Length: 441
Image (cartoon, rainbow, N blue to C red; front, side):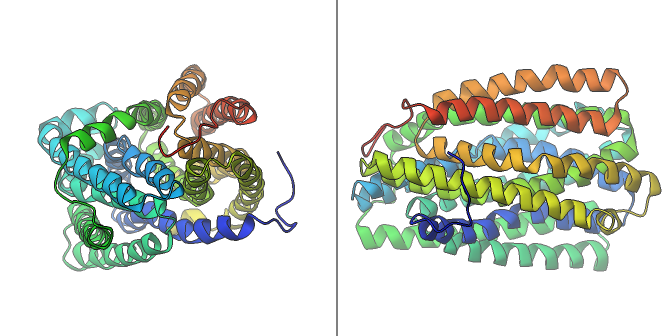
């Protein structure tokens, strides 16, 4: 399956047409927290650690619902490939209604649980206080965040990644300005950073709602809630929910272990993880192209085209992973200074970035294969293999902590997790079971 992305290929144009704008849109998401980290980091180590803990808790709540984007992309793309645009829009609207229901439920259920959610990370009392402040405010933005996921999925399924890029650029710009004003000018502290993100995400959601309503009018799709359609969207996303839950266990345990090492460790892990997350989203641009292209080809019953596009996207994933890894090593000496003035945090971060860089080529393949199988609607397999990879990570992480291996041991355990995912996803991609054709799986 592996070849050179430097050699011309007929699939390059459609891959790049979707992946390049998706790259910008996906990078904007971790830039929200990187911006917060850069601003909050200058307030103090405890504040930066609090952002790290709250950021993981919030990301867990939101990205357990990432099926709103991924499942919607695959379903809409299949309907589009089969030539039924009205059904494609209707399926996307069902996903957006589901996002509203889940978002409101998370606010109601999550608000009283904030102290418990923060406490389970095991960080120090000074870090806990800031984490609770950030998380309580950020919960109010969850409905907007979930609507952004669902709305993005609709447009990606329609083979449009350019519009989500423009919305993300606007959202990132608003988030940056609001954070500077609220934190540095008005001196609202970590709460100001959270309010800036809430306002920016809610504004982005309003833009997506307007766009999908316009598309519904154009194609004659109803926009009122359809209980059967919402239930179908929820059922279809169940396996992706399990997949994401298994992955979030890895990230929660990683943050919890880093927090138990000490304040400098959780601060360094927070920054290192956000840099990792930035690169994950960048590599995921090809995976997003994989979701949209795979769904469309299978919806049109074109197995040969699916195989050819898959091979090409894997080649691009490997090449991008190598480029990103080399890039981290080149800028590594200067990166810590952007986030902290603490010498201990800086030293820990310098060591972590070496392993982050070395894992990028593996990540390039893993995230592309994940996107391809999501686009194929292969949720049950993804759920099972995500659980297997998590079970490989947990003993490795606990062993590293028990042996006093520090952050380097923790990042090595993350490497074990990535290798497990590479093996299981690669095995599936070589087979035929995921190549199910038609407008629905």
